[in-house]
Length: 525
Image (cartoon, rainbow, N blue to C red; front, top):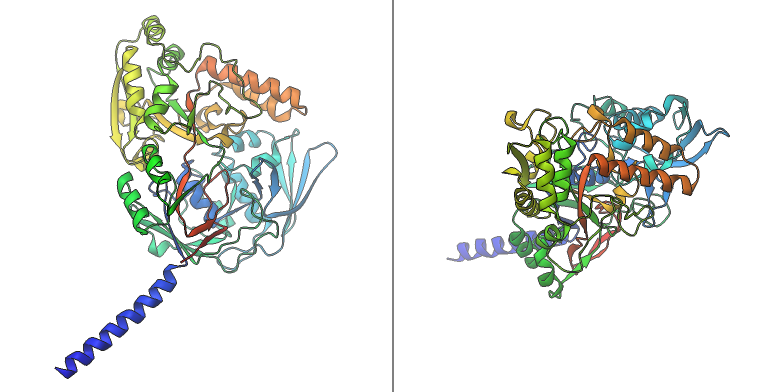
């Protein structure tokens, strides 16, 4: 018996020793339940926020946006413009290097800008002003415009659809294809060998990253990382997410289900943090290529049929976290405008039904996609279905996971051939503050955002906004863009909301920004 007891004691001691090592190590592992499953890893190929947030971990940007919406340099050290505003010269700051140790050069930046500008809404507009690049040296390059583009810094520093800088060999990948090399120069390194779609994505701290010296502020300033490892843990069920947070199995839920906030506020070991304090906006997007929504009268009928209050009360649920907002620009921002014509944000099924009859709608089904595994979006389609049907639409609600929806919305075929007619999404309010940054106002046709609205008039108004030099002129063109967007029904605004992250009390810091970022966070014991 003595040998057995000795082995038992040794095994027990070994387990305790291993457990103590694990406990110490776990103190520097941050586990986060992201808003959705991460399956697309190319932040230029898709506009999905979970992929954008992945991009902010491993890539860097030329400029960023602080908490007040001010554009500040990030990878750029200094810049200047010619007197006629046609030539912009940029110099990169010292210490920039990719994860493979190679320095970031002008060639990398230029290739990255070109790839980004073929897909992003602002990038597409930027490209219509762009003439050529000029290389000064490895760290300095020039952008030459055919005509002044006053939103240059905003284009390279915005939080949504960011111009992430990649190695040239990666950025040379056609924008129609997804990249397969995830080498960046950001504060985290992606562990491709530990990536399991539908289960987890793993990142480790980039020990060689040189942060800026300014305090972190939005996506600007010093991106200091205080944890050794970040794990995005995919948990689809909201109640299971909450149980994992309560048990300490995860440290943060990015977007809890709306009905859970009362419970979360009553938990002493949990705090709420507005990671994206500007909030977000729900919208319904149409496929402009195929009937019935290729007919503007049918789109107008849908707009009249929908009411914000019912959607918000069902989807967000918690009073104080949502607000009615008729303006297509976020309420409380510079270009907010209640001059919205026939759009009231209040459901009017009688007027909608009359317009459907005038359009000759014959009851053909419209495919509305619903993501069942995305708590922040799963209920709104149910309400929209009811409202559309009350106006006379026949709605084919098709359930799928979020990543399937993202893949399907890229298909341009009719719904009967695997395409779609409409879907609901949300975008950060900070991404909708003007007509150039708002994806829903991208009317560039085949080069535009999903739905492929093709409206040269709206694109012309956006160009006028981009070259305007006075606040009064920009205000005028922003209003004209809104009027045109409502007239052609680029989308339907379903209201504003907030969705603070739920975080365990031992997690401190955190940088509110236009995206979910994970630098500046400390994990205590």
